[in-house]
Length: 264
Image (cartoon, rainbow, N blue to C red; front, side, top):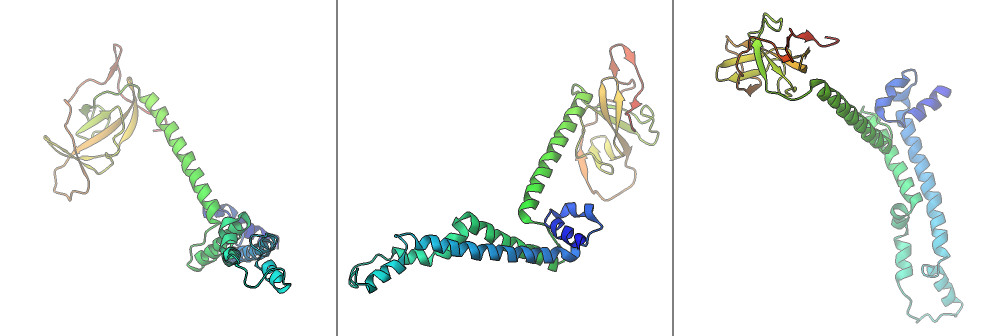
């Protein structure tokens, strides 16, 4: 019973958190939780609606029953002109309660969200509460964006000042299988492994990029392998090769070979 009660509560949470509770029968009780939410919303809505009607009955502007009673008691002539506003207010009372009162809005949401959760289970894609899922998604995206910005700031600090790309031989970088390597101060988002690099000097296939610590700072090494066979063009980028250098990047007067970044 405790597992069932816990599962009913957990199924209200966003779907991505369900994996943390593997021991609970979440998928079996997801539709039950949705149906119970619908019942709770309906009960709250019915009770709130009758309370709303009681408040309307106590209002002189909306009490059509009081007007009828006054006519029966001869306190108001039957031929007297009576405004249709009270009757109109009674006619729109269900809509006014459902969409313009806090209790009505909450009851409508419970019924609608419960139906959605039960229906999503029926189509084999169960979900948690829609509002909680929306809030969780927004918070998750905000945290992910903040983490990405912090990572980018750290990388920019490690890279140091921006500078033009440099070209060296593959042997210089310790990559004998590469004809050349491009040393870039900033990452190139479109340069992924297998991309064709199209240059006036020929076509190259891009190897696996790697980060290395050089004297000027953190740099990205892009291996270029000359394309010698015909192959279907999957993805290509145009590029102007920089001059081939024979000495590594310098800082001050020292000359150093490239060293691998930590963890590489």
